[in-house]
Image 1 (cartoon, rainbow, N blue to C red):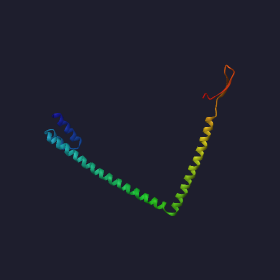
Image 2: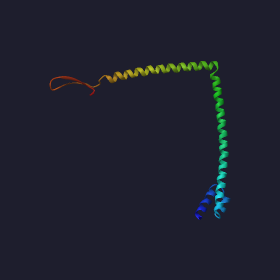
Image 3: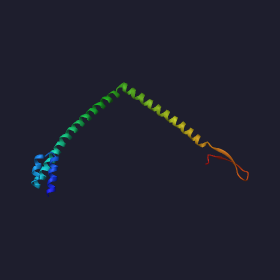
Image 4: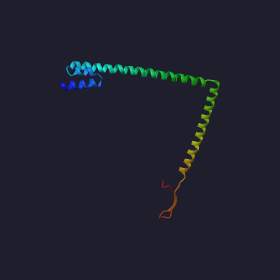
Length: 136
């Protein structure tokens, strides 16, 4: 029982309830009350910090929405529409170029892998000549 009281006293001191820690040694009920009081104080402090963080996050979100609205206003203007069309056309042309480049690369690889690289002529013991290519 004494070890439990000491542990409760240490917990109360760590929780910042030094005045309650002296009472903890005397009574088990007082120990539980002190620990509960310290836990409640920590929870209240956490709620205050959490509320501040939530308010800060809301302000950041509001600013992000305002920036997005400004960007959309510029993008929907006549100059913005022309810019978006030009960018879309440039992206489409780049995609088509990449497709043809990849297509040509695939055909070069297909031809390269279908042609034998190592070839030699061999003769069987019966006199028949054969051509060996790539050891396939």
